[in-house]
Image (tube, rainbow, N blue to C red; front, top):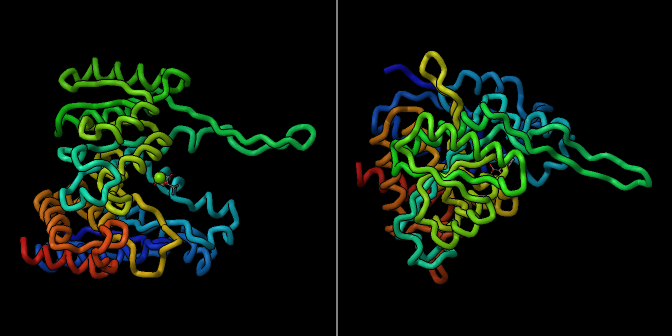
Amino acid sequence: MRQQNIVILPGDGVGPEVTAEARRVLEWFIARRGLALRLDAYPYGADAYRLHGQVLPKETAEAIRTAHAILFGAMGGTDGDAIPREARVAGGLPQLRRSLELFANLRPIVTIPALYESSSLKNRLLPGVDFVIVRELIGGIYFGKPRGIETLAKGERRGFNTQTYTSSEIRRIARFAFELAGSRRRQVCSVDKANVMEAGVLWREEVQALRDAEFPDIALRHMYVDNCAMQLVRAPAQFDVIVTDNMFGDILSDCAAMAAGSLGMLPSASLGAVDQAGRRAALYEPVHGSAPDIAGRGIANPLGAILSVAMMLRLSLERPEDAALLERAVEAALVSGARTADICEPGMPAVSTSEMGAAVIAALERLQ
Ligand code: IPM
Ligand code: MG
């Protein structure tokens, strides 16, 4: 079996702590399930800037370009302000995603009965919640130009950004969502703000036209983003695939996370287009971010990172059975009572980041 290169970017904040556990899990699959992987960690983020003068050092940039898949922790620490804005933006996560053309960001939200009590939603809303937010990741208002802060007459200042989408950008992400829905429950909900924004009008028209022309067997409905935010907390089980733009997907995925019990539970995959050789660039990361307030204390929840490894097994390594095994092991670890602080119920003892990693490894040993 040919060896595949996995590049690990632990990054900042809690990134190194959670990726250490995700790495242990990958090492378990190498040792026990015969995966032929090479794991190499590279510097990226605030530490990289301190050591190499760049947020994204050259050797890291080269490594990720040839990687079979990237496992990323988080970026943006408390000392982020010590990095000049230009260097931070140039090496930042949005630019990294864009340089690899990772246009499709998948954020699955699945509820696990063992965590119903950790959710801020009522238990009766949680059975059957199993949906994916497909967020367009390299366009829209986070990248649109013009952008900036300008000074007007009399010292008044004006900050501005531009929401922009072309029809091909919209169709690219919509096609991804329809194809994904085809392997699921065949329902797509497209989210926009077409009642106010022209970019939303175009979004809606293009998504509908693509559905009508190429995906007649997929049920499509459109929803305004404000309504969607409400529906996610009112009746989250109604969704199968949600497709939306960069900013709306960013916001809705944090909101949806609470159905799963904690933002710390959410994995993600950011994917590029399949090239001629059949390969696609792929970056896997927990959704939670660097959480500088708890960094270095060994209390972060590593399950978002570990479940990102499950997504990697399924989407980049063609190991769907191993992906399912890992997801079952995460659930078993939770059923056995392992809880990090973010998902701990009152009166329950919380385990550390590495104890949670160990609980998942123990469950893998039991279940394999
Ligand atoms: C996310 C994060 C990032 C984003 C930040 C850290 C740039 O919030 O992945 O959701 O806005 O995409
Ligand atoms: Mg976000």
